[in-house]
Image (cartoon, rainbow, N blue to C red; front, side, top):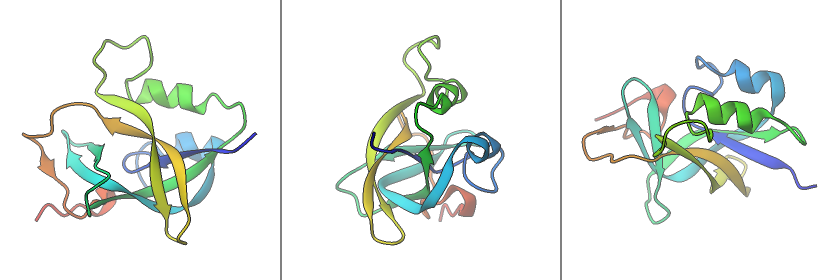
Length: 133
């Protein structure tokens, strides 16, 4: 069975408030980025995927343990489990990510699923190093 990967860019990253969820269950693979834009939603981040954009959303990739319930737990954390009302604020999608060592792989990511026109873009693409200028 091929390994499953997860790309995180906000509160699940190392040093962030919810990282313990991953630290207990997953293996850190490396720093990574995906083409897109990152926004400050309301004190937490929301990334959108923009394959043709030069901007990058910075984050980390984790290997998920085989037959793990981690994604189910994270779906609840991100508010996109089946029991949550639709439309969900986030959707879990596979996205291409580039690792710092040059490798590219497909990873699950929680992508913001609402209009971003009134949000402030985090120009650095790095939620832990917010720069909106």
